[in-house]
Image 1 (cartoon, rainbow, N blue to C red):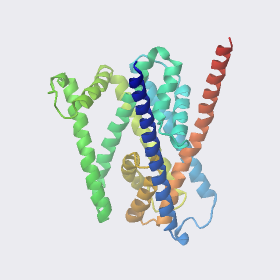
Image 2: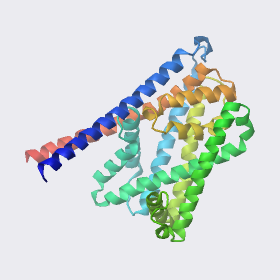
Image 3: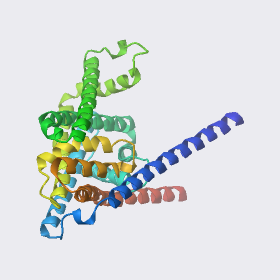
Image 4: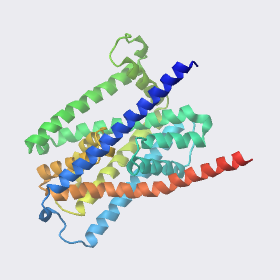
Length: 344
């Protein structure tokens, strides 16, 4: 490679790293700023509970148990998806991958997502199935998005009057429902195009043609392995409900004003918006949503709404710390192995 081209490549790489670092810094700043604003503006006498007790601790332990159940169900779903590619990994190992991904996604200030960690660990343990491992995570994510869209639309429809009791929330839910409907139409259209083998006939300048072709490949895998894809979809329902219920238990630790039905109704909205790359892992955005939604719809004080969100995320941070032991232990063992290989 000519020297000028090499210099250009190095400059491009440095520019990319600076851009990534800037984006990460902005997300951290947004998260910190949102939390500071939310905490400062809350009157201290509006925070519940006024005193701690066994009930609060019991609900918090319940949230921990439900969160672990959600991780187990997620690993189980991924195991079913991997079976599509004839890749068989023990459930315990996949659970370790998930917890390690949670550690990286929630604890470290990094742009590396949990999905990337899962793919890397799977490729390291099964180097002969690198492509299959990458595709399995894509299918796994597609099934999760599919179920979340369906649940979001159902709750938006079944509880439309409840959401409309607040003008601001009702307006937000209308836009959310429209977005989910567009996503549902896009998913259905791509599925139909795939099942009818019409994707390759799309004009070259058709909007999002490349993305549709990529999605069609994932749909094709699901069509060719209907049983495993169906089981993966079914497992996603209790997985999401465990996630929603964990936050419901976090709410019950502070107030009785939030029912299971209320929490599961708002969680698709909270999950979708906090997943956007606005802040670090949704921190700050999630708290603002909980504070506003629970205040407007359930009559929960804003201080308590903030505590509910923080308590719910604390549960995930704790399990992320457990995943940290798996993550760091794995990194250490591989480092030692490479040192021993180099010494030989």
